[in-house]
Length: 307
Image 1 (cartoon, rainbow, N blue to C red):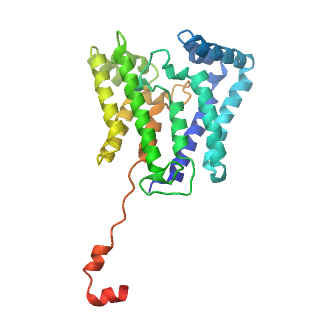
Image 2: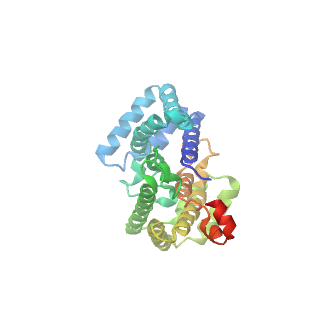
Image 3: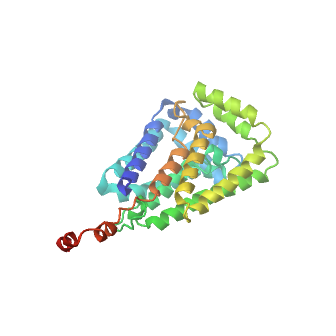
């Protein structure tokens, strides 16, 4: 049975994984700051780029200290979610930390740069950590429709969050279509650099097959994103969630290289697992069978004894 507590614990484990990844040796080198953080500054508006550059220079003065604090913060959030009495403060800290990371660490998911796409994980996994954190905020209520029905915002709040996430994805695909050139094959080749050999081989083969289909595929993904966003409000809710899971895993495998977890440079598992977690949290709860029909067919003496 899928429960709100189970989703909170899973979210905590993902935060803990992020913290452990931050302890990798690469994160303690100035290459991490130069290639991951500062690389986003040139194409950002000045109001967004200058704070990123300032934060990078500050961390660079004593990277061992600052990176350890970054890692411990994420581990503390994860451990806080694993321990029921500290779920609320852990979530509160996670919201503030997610905003800092989204700005300084991810450059607002490259949205302001008109780069990237949902295929490669934009607008950023850290946004999904915050979204899921909001909908799993503890509450005493339970509407019974899904695991999120026991959360502060209920099942409806979870559906709103799901639709918002996928409509943002649709907007990003529309942004992709507005560019002079977009290449799915290029994204696949770039992602292949961070892949295990067997996956990189698949990505190269797929890139060769889709060489001229970037805009067409972006249009298809835009339409699918809209259908996934609105489908959960209909009787096709399960199908819309399942389609969201399949598309998220497709993006995660081929566009996000399974989060690049084996490269030594990954800071998180990327967006795919978080979208799947949100879908699982919204999966409709199984209804208990109605006992009234069985009672109606019982013999008169059985009905009398049961009454």
